[in-house]
Image (tube, rainbow, N blue to C red; front, top):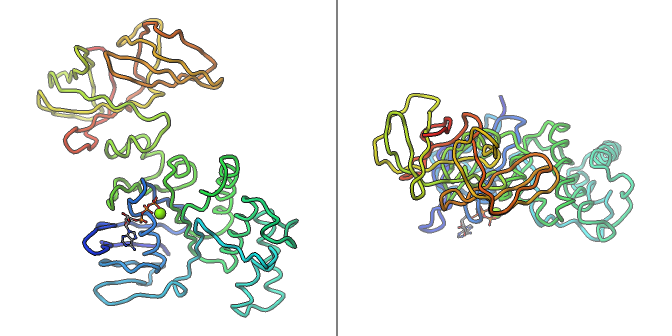
Length: 371
Ligand SMILES: Nc1ncnc2c1ncn2[C@@H]1O[C@H](COP(=O)(O)OP(=O)(O)OP(=O)(O)O)[C@@H](O)[C@H]1O
Ligand SMILES: [Mg+2]
């Protein structure tokens, strides 16, 4: 099956390790996002796959063909890798019409005239820019220009399309629109998309797989909802989701049953989904998604004070003080809560995360009940 494979790919700039021993399989027709904070190595990774940057070590295979190997001394130039790029500063040619911007590359490749015309028509339609075909880039909005840039990149029908923050120049509304378009394009073309972003929402909503990076290391490579539901560590847990996951520092008080103590004198019982043996005194971090904290009238597990209530109609974001610890809860529906009031909380579901505080890794998932 055609796919992109990275094996032990490392990139050093002098002594600085920008990407460290990256192993990744990008399946054919998948939509992979490289996600992470500024400077974590996303662009460098993308450029290495594209052939614009030479890895210090490792092997890169595209469609069963080795395009880079430090050991074998193979380095296939970018234009021979059958890939297309779309970078943040996609410069359209200002003196060419939309039509010409798209057809130009095909003319250079000496495609026959009628085939070029067919292809450009097809792309104009696919990107919904047919009506602008005679205009110049300066006569288009940012989003329309972006569509032209995408059409131009897709024109030769590359098997893989690489995009580095292509929507970052657009305003919030256009970004939303273009996300939907990109998802549609991905379905309609047979291409594999590799997409760089530091926007977790973009990565969550667009991709089939997320590669979450930090300081050159891969933190987790998994489908977006798996990163959300089962984050590999506290970094991954905190990076995806808005409002952020609640991270509570706690200590193991007793091992069986597993009772965690936190704050000044609060306790909760954690029942892991799989057998788990922790030592008394172990330092852990509880990770609770805001939507897993419910405010209840009866049968509370623990009490907290309402600090603020932000109703937006569809949902209300509530800030709570639980024994000196600030928590956020998302309550669905058009509810409002009285600030300063003491309320009862319960914790929903069996997807409460327990992390090791030493290395941040996920130890277990389970339920939280009264100790
Ligand atoms: N040519 C270079 N020479 C030296 N260091 C570099 C070079 N290119 C990148 N770096 C460093 O490598 C690290 C990774 O850079 P990269 O551009 O891949 O980050 P990024 O994840 O794309 O960040 P951003 O979200 O800000 O675009 C950064 O610390 C950067 O300073
Ligand atoms: Mg970058």
